Amino acid sequence: MSAGSRPAGERGSATVWVVALAGVLAAIGVAAVLVGAAVVGRHRAAAAADLAALAAAEHAVRGDPGACAAAGEVAGANGARLTACTVGGGAVVEVAVEVPVRLGPLGVSRASGRARAGPVAP
Image (cartoon, rainbow, N blue to C red; front, side, top):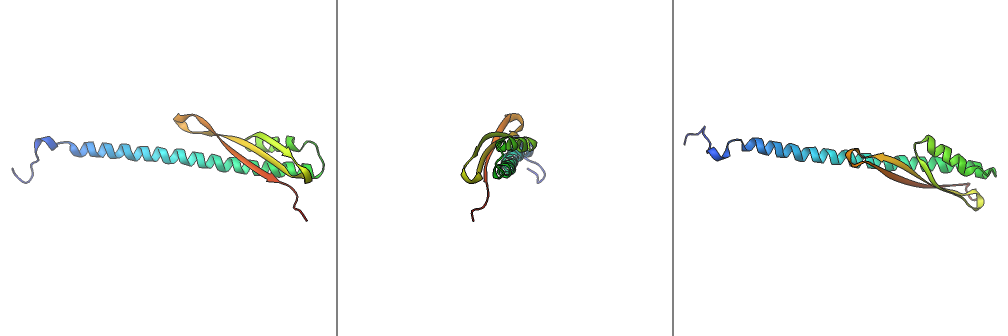
């Protein structure tokens, strides 16, 4: 056998390895994008909950009975849906929101966020 020749059974094996490696890299890339989308959704939910709680607390401090309505408006403006809102003693507000997260071919999931806001105790 000369130096430039290969056994007939190994012809094209490099192509198979390259295709397999490309498939693995594509799967890793898709997984990274899906994890990134989930993380971004979680951060969006947390931010929407924080802003909604602050808006509701501002209304609750003034004695406005529409504090949870304000929280719902702020959550909606941030692409979230208000799922819970309670105004406790001392105008402390707790809210929970959900944000839709699109995960491509896996469909739409939901990320949730919770926040609490109110006046600082003296």
